[in-house]
Image 1: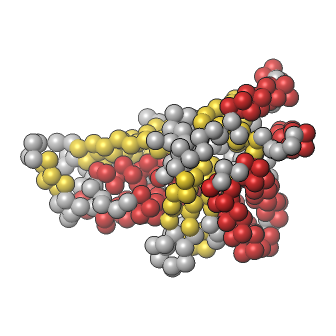
Image 2 (image 1 turned 45 degrees about the horizontal axis):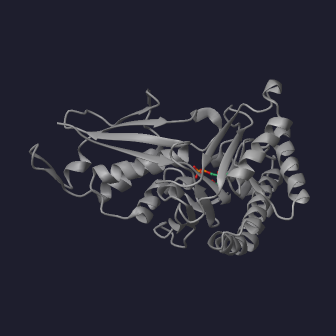
Image 3 (image 1 turned 135 degrees about the vertical axis):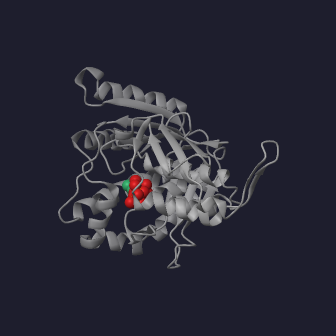
Length: 349
Ligand code: DP6
């Protein structure tokens, strides 16, 4: 016999960034962060997990290609899920798996991204969230999404925020064992559904410095990072929560853009400096900032993760249409400054 479970999880984009860990193994951050989860039809991972007594070892395929499972992060997630596994019984098929059996049975896992993994767009966030969720269902884990987020977090920090739709906060927590470092939903996907997210893919090449090693270097060398985590982010988190609650786009946009710029300032303050944005990214910022100055209130927010691609959040569909017009004007496809656009609504099922 074989039992299978399939789950689908979208990626999320941080509007108040996570950058820096206080514990590298458990993946515990030095500040809270807030993100928005995308619609699953655009950037998401679909994962099928299967168990059978005939499987000889744990195996995993990513986009159809088998990958090694030696990574500590993957093993941590698996170990944590197995600890919480419960009995599973399918009377029709005459299958019974006890809590203890889960420690001996092997798993086959197949994961697909509906976007290029190498596109510099967060794939580990959706990937580990989907893995934790699918394994939790397979092994009849009784815990809720916040508890599952504790497991996803140990795969990749930002993954913990993809267990919920809408707006999500990752609370950094205080405990040494990481049990209170988890994600909570601030507002569901219906709360602010006018927003439209457009990703301008500046480069589809894989980034040179991974988030993991980049943030390690920043923690070790950037004074600005520590000032940010202690003095700036706590206040900014409260302001962002307020902006989201009131659907206050002007504040939301100001906080999102400022936080992205500060994160990249921290990267520059790292020794040696890390450059994630390039000239095209900077031009996009200038275009949006100029637009901000020409209107009474901002129409679009920008944010950049550990790569040059711009995530643009338009206040509604009309603004999104204007934004695309402007992007096409400044970056005509013939010049090849941008590799592609990915357009999607915020929010998930
Ligand atoms: C810039 O979650 O990819 O996207 O925890 O080491 O796997 P690890 O890092 P990761 O870092 C994401 C950094 C970021 C900001 C964010 O998503 O909050």
